[in-house]
Length: 307
Ligand SMILES: Nc1ncnc2c1ncn2[C@@H]1O[C@H](COP(=O)(O)OP(=O)(O)OP(=O)(O)O)[C@@H](O)[C@H]1O
Image 1 (cartoon, protein in one colour):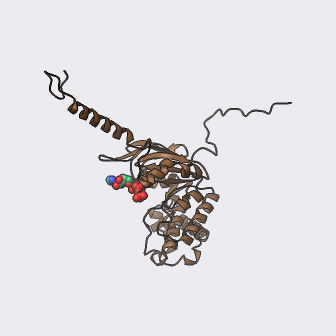
Image 2: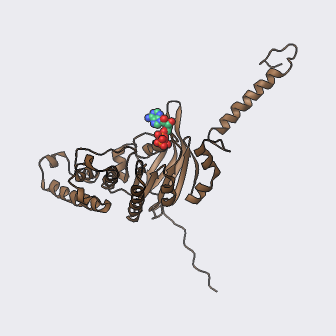
Image 3: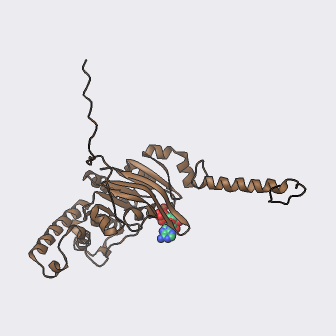
């Protein structure tokens, strides 16, 4: 019987298809005395849909803001396809990370098409003078952008509304338009912050389909969402943040079965909860102080002094 050939170990550091698109290493964000995010590591691989969940105030949006350059993390680094990102939102977008926000941020008085075209600005090289003089290069770039924007509107099902004002779209379509605008920057990773907030069940289902279709186009997705059915249906992997720390990470089944996650959502204490060590230290110090207070005093010593 012949032994199957073994793969030779990689001899160089060339990126492979399975290298993470996103790698967050020890990301910490403090606001004065409040640590909103504490030492969070997270990776997202190509074509993965990763969910980020956690109770209100757990630090999810703050973490997104660290990933996208809106905040400069107090500690830690964020890399996209192996390169550490500068903490500047436009450079992060240019590198290949696009995002949507918890609250819709469209240009309400611009048309649907114009909103998508705005999202393309990091992909067009023509400068201000070229635009003002309407140079041939600018006109060509403008045509290409419009074609691409139209394709994206077809993809999300809003091509028939391209000339409507964004503010006249129903809520669910405004959310879709935000996603199309994010996709216009041609990202390799899309971050979605509560994409189904305020949606009815049909709109939520349609958003689920849309996220799967985005993944099928080869774009990785990291999504924050409070709708657990959405998250557990959709995600290849789920990370749970509690009080700024990553508590659990795994498949939907692993996370759903983890009693610490249930406890965190119900606000119950659990073994290993963030802050538990500090709480235990305080309790031990208080117990020691009580014992000292109850103990009969030794002649020649006063409370708090060594004999
Ligand atoms: N700019 C800021 N300055 C001070 N504190 C902040 C700032 N942004 C967030 N925080 C605090 O950081 C903590 C985490 O907030 P964050 O919005 O990231 O949580 P979240 O998990 O996204 O919550 P939700 O699910 O309610 O959106 C909260 O205590 C919040 O008050």
